[in-house]
Image (cartoon, rainbow, N blue to C red; front, side):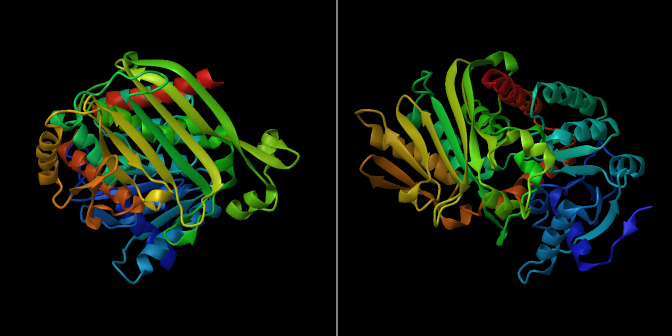
Length: 456
């Protein structure tokens, strides 16, 4: 029997779970609301899905997990959301902890949508068992971290189709406004022209993401589980954060089009480590010693983590490059950063997020050479996008134009989890994903897991 926890922390955890999924799916056994299950939450993304509440989601969330610091941290963060002064959530949690948490969840099946954000080594197996049991799944990335996991993930998608449930991963970066506008502007031929083919030395699309082990989440220092630094459990950087970057390339270069693994040609891939001192490891994990499973990554007490990776490839003959970098801590006033360029025949669309931008992502349009009448045609094309996003405007600079974006569109990374959840709820209500989403997810994980094989 599920143990009902009446503490404030439990209430908050339930509320957080409600935020994760909140749309009824016509093809599942739902009454008028979604009922959420959270399984083995070990990553703070599980909390962020519950930072906001959803009308379509039942306020009771069912949590199954092994007892330990990870589920406690999850509940504490949900409690923080429940008790905040502004727009508090009202989650209630039904919690089961025990070594048989997975079997117990599958036997009880108290909800119809499973939320997964935690240990990536276990995640693909969780996904497969859940869809086999007829559960919809909203999973944090990555859904597969190696070739073996990729093969199991393909089986999971087949099972989801057979059982008429929706399996979807959390691609928050599509909702970052500069990424959204870069994609929309690239569809304006008079402004962007045609996407170039590019070369290995100068790809048509390049994306680079810089992350940090030590960071602040929802106002508090993030405590990471020790397994986060074990690439057998977390996955290497080349298959983790690069999932977002590969997704953005597919989404922006070929919007609402199916791309298949046969459209991918890997050219090169490489991986390298970020090194942590014992004091840095303690700072982010609160542990005094390294667990035994990290011994093979130690040299003279320094922990080397294969957190960095680069992939060069073509997608439908378009040259692309993705790169992820992990540092220990951001410089003063900085945070995680993103760089992106799409090269068009008429203009390049560039996202920069460096010191000059005060570490805020900013989008620029830079014309290619001298083009008669380009300014007028570009401004007319820009107005079509402005109609979709009222308030954006152009500001001339020495290299071209900066797209000025009103603050109302810049809601921050944490809010994007709620946006993904809301979109997933729409799909659940419709009873299907867009036709291109599943094949493109498969192609995305093919790209990252095959790149890992090449890099090794």
